[in-house]
Amino acid sequence: MTPEAPVPETDLKQQLAERFREVNGDHPMTGADDAYVSAQFVVLEELCAVHGRDADAVRRLMLGRCLPLPGYLRSDGAEMVPADLFALADAAGGVGLLEAWFTGHWADPVTGKAEWDAYLSGQYVCLHSVTPATIRRKDHLTAAIDAAVNEPDAGSARWSGRLHALVDELDALEPAFTAYDRLRFGGPTSRDTCVDAVRARFPRP
Image (cartoon, rainbow, N blue to C red):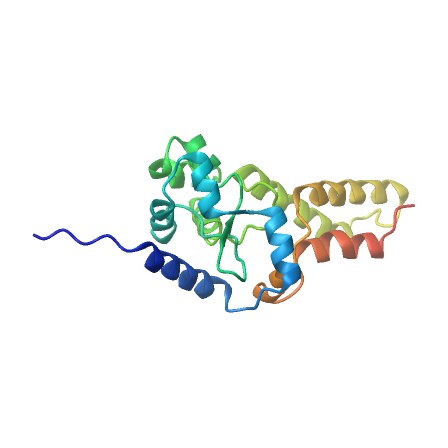
């Protein structure tokens, strides 16, 4: 049997860009979006060079659902990824062990699988550092903030202190987001609804 010829780098980049747009839609990146992304993320090839990894091999892992897709495609086509892209696989003992390690952080296998799928999408740009712990903490904080208005002592000074402690913690976990995110997510971000809007509606005493 004749071995398959390796896929050229340009084809892998094109395949990855197509997969990215399947997940996120085809939305334009503005100059402001590019500046935000360049400050928050790193170019895939540059990160691979720092870690001694082959960029083509990493693209294949992304396309094979072993590593998350890029968080953004800059307008020049650069695949933008978090600086700690490889950290979870290293913690798990290797890419081949990552899925089991990751999903094992949830008692419910269905929830764990859903979170794994969300992680692979690359859309966890809502966290400075994407780990099972920060994902779970963000979910807890947003749910607690949403529920706060229905608490029995809502409006009291003690309630306000609890609410703003939750908001401040979420604020520390999340980056600022950019306009592109509101296009691909089809509306406001969790920072918009659970940080900025809450602070505007319930100012600190």
